[in-house]
Length: 309
Image (tube, rainbow, N blue to C red; front, side, top):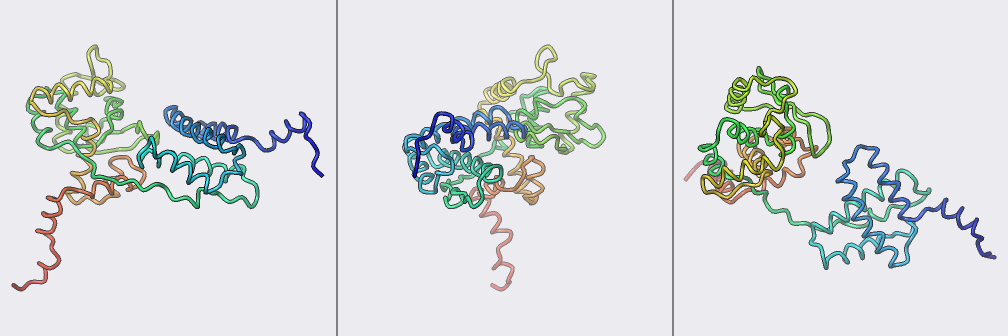
């Protein structure tokens, strides 16, 4: 026979079976302890907040009461305001939460409902890169510092934040290696190697400045480090001067990756150069223009190798 819970018993039960909100709070603490950036935590928090509201509106407050049907209905409910890419972001965040709960606190016999739910299918168009013609044009009007900036972006595939964070000591005069702090993945330092042209330009720039050690490799006015906004202004100014559309900063990174792929460099090596943990993103570099496919077939047609007329 069921009895009415006293206030004290209710509090105890709540402590034993926390609400979804309390599990989310614990999940965010765990992610912060793992070193996730505040922007990432905010990303999680906002999307999980929307999910909690949906659950509450459907009278679900216990994380163990979440099932595959609820998850599917929630994803479908997002379609009114979000495209497939936005829906997949919510799916990925909820999946991270449920996997963490499964590892950390799920009772014996609990089955993770997210495993039954397929993520929304997101079409992946080819990644657009800065054009070689635009880069060449900007180099014709760039001074010594700006020339090095463009060459380094195009040669090494750095993120804007990674380039701005470079110090003089990060460049090895002898080998042309750059020690790059990975701003997005927070995965420490990776080493990339500049080509001969970029190496020569960096060496010339540094000799003219007599800069050493912890000084920023790329300086703004007053010898302060170049900022993201400052870098964007540099590209916008050069593009305007030669009459081309200013390439987005990230498009230089795509140019570097796509150029390496087109040159025959394997995807694993390209991923290491760009600082990716895998080749998933790079598969989009393979979705290249029809002219690339035409040229590949002209050079490597299987039937042409058979000989004959």
